[in-house]
Image (cartoon, rainbow, N blue to C red; front, top):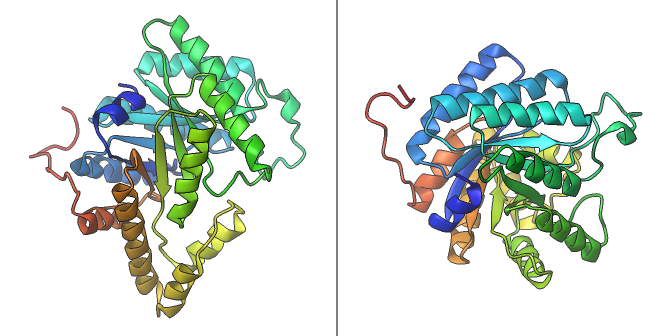
Length: 306
């Protein structure tokens, strides 16, 4: 089922994002975590797509395993950076054969270990082109083809200071075939509401899913700032973190802040909330419990398909 179909049927939706581990042991541990989260009946789960070759293969393997061994709807991230046309065609073919129906299409960032990499060697320079390619390639194989999502930036794209052009580029991705938008994480809901209104003014009518991530530790907060994701940390949040005595206190602050974000988003008719889990389930479960919206109905014996 396409994510757009799920968003139309189940409002609001809740979904989770994971990143591919670097080792086989970590992969097994993550898969167990993902399987346990079935109890919350998420609308879908997604797996990010790193710059390294081995990480990319783990993304493919994990997505296919989720599709085959769980009841979850899987969404694979796919970037155009460091990919020629033949490689992208092979990925598409594998996903079609494996029954993968949904892809989040991204331009992607140049790998840090390849600072001199020439993007002209890539098949596509922009996410819009990747969306169009995925749409055309998958429909040629028969059926509806892929359901395609794209990224949105409530606080503004870090490489696009012109907010008017930013909306133009986003609309081009939607017009190329994107079915929904999943936003980067943010900590001030006013940024999301403003982004949603500007999408409406730009004629962008596809569903918009809000990205939320509970802060876990002070060091994690510092890493987020160093990654230059464009995230703004409200002073009220920073004060709460400063009052915490240790990482356990910071975690409680992060869960409380994320809970209040989600409560407010739900009150403002958000189409979906996408949790950036950092491959952990505890914080997400606590937010669900705090909201009182958990759909947890534990699968009686085996959380995996027989």
